[in-house]
Length: 276
Image 1: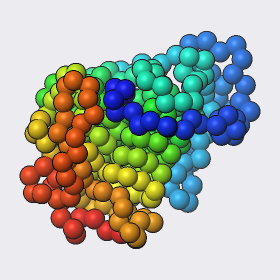
Image 2 (image 1 turned 90 degrees about the vertical axis):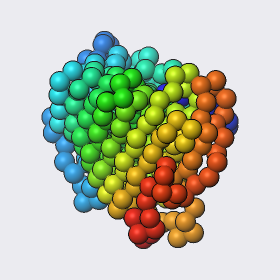
Image 3 (image 1 turned 90 degrees about the horizontal axis):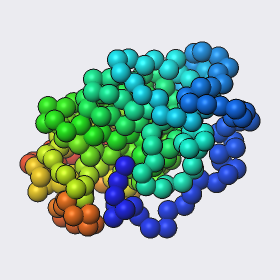
Image 4 (image 1 turned 180 degrees about the vertical axis):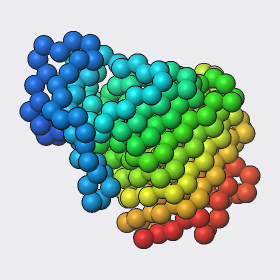
């Protein structure tokens, strides 16, 4: 989730045709709560690494998770109040994870609403977003000791951010795939309450088009460490690995102050980024 000041103007909406294609004719009539239509229980991974979902489930009310939720590589998509296909602010998520929760083996289809919210420390394991909605996941814990872990999985078609880091603590992303995106992860630039945030990104495959991998606020002491990043289809090197901003808590647009490795805030070297 982000404030209105962070939302780029002129964002296109998902077309009805695309939505229908993803839904594949699954009937949504008569659904209540998070109840749904499931065809098979377990999906499989295809040759490219992206999973073939094993069935689909419409979600009309946020699924709250404590402990571990294993989706069996089933596709979950929004319906009813979660069925919008635009970028409106304040949307509810498909999944809301309580402190310490684990979400794994899930495919989030379209409409994706506001994806996943983590109220505190959480783990996202083998979670895939086929068409990112407002954001893929938002990390909202308020403890400096909170840890958010993303392992495996991937995201496509993010008009803006994939991961929105609004809370405090550390975010670790590894073994992830991202394609056709704005930013992989952004430390909130203008949230009303700001924190120091630590970000680590390693062993990630990035496919153009894309804009930035990480955006951080140096005035709050944010750091980003990048290792073993493989960028595909960007021979002109337009994708910026790390961008520095001066953030604020007033809702104003944050000011970009630089990009590239600096040894203090953006921590990586040229050898950590490869272009294929």
